[in-house]
Length: 434
Image (cartoon, rainbow, N blue to C red; front, side, top):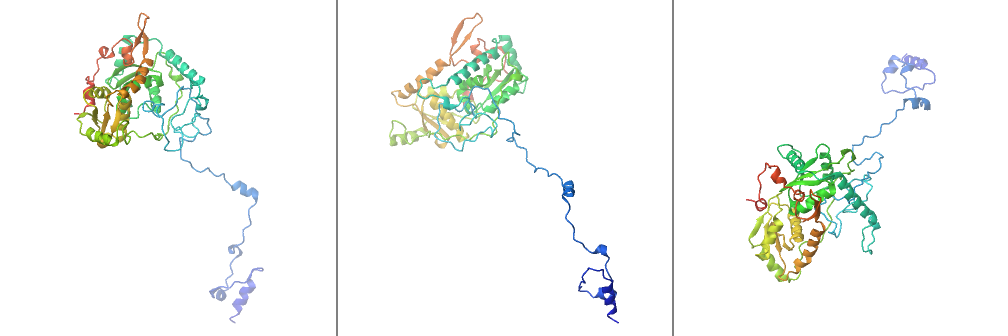
């Protein structure tokens, strides 16, 4: 009698389904048979047409926005006829480095500029076109660019400003009239600053530029580079404040293409500024001079981000009394007072002795004046070659010395026309810190 339920269950089992053995005996006792709908059946693979309908197109993976992605656009082309550098006032083609600190990665980004990066600059003309053995290694293409730039600058500037127009523009750029100002710091006139100047020229005819730090040692070079690279004209200079005029025929819609640098390139490796022994002296004499230089009375103390335009003349006057000059640079970054020392070496001229203990110690050289004779000739020739010539109201042309500012060259004194809100500070007091 006990086997009857089992036989009944087996009899009721659907055909083709093998008997299953369960751990529990409840099914054997109650004779329950699961319906066919609950029995798992193997799934058939879907057809290709059905899978294609249900299949969705995969979204591309998310990519962070990057300024390096050109999106298939061609490299930018600029018609500016000069080599692109990070700083135009703090680097010169004459100073040759001895090596690079990193590979020649273009700071403009990969594929963003059609000029190759040579480690120091992006030349406007391929350097392979130069003929070193020729008397004039400057290629014809580069000479043509310089001539075209000169003619274009004369066309944009147009007729000289009258005294009334100059006074109006200077008064319009004063601090009490506008807050527009471009700050020129320790890096000098950088490449991206050219774009800032042209952006300001969209809405105003002149822009105010404030110069502080290392570049103010040679303000003559700052003014020259500003006028040369932007094509404008400095119509007013009061201490470290400059006002740069864009020209009568300047068209913002036809401004030059200025590709921006995305990062600051690493500075190359230059020869050592301080030698083990000074040329013409022995090792013992060099050591004694460095010890003596640390005890020389301080000529002046340089403030951080100050105005150092009178420093060169102060050092020249001090050399009339003593052969060693010491300048206190406490609080300044090491790179700043090293750059100041290089400028003093080229402008005074003098010999760098030491940078120990945040002091610049310079020596005027031997009494025979051989150092002054070697450096004074190229310095005077540079002044003669850069002398400006302007025409007065009667049309006569007269020669103007280089050390005059642009507002003096025009025959008017801008400081007398427009009163400046800032008090006039002497160059001696501005270079000293109280």
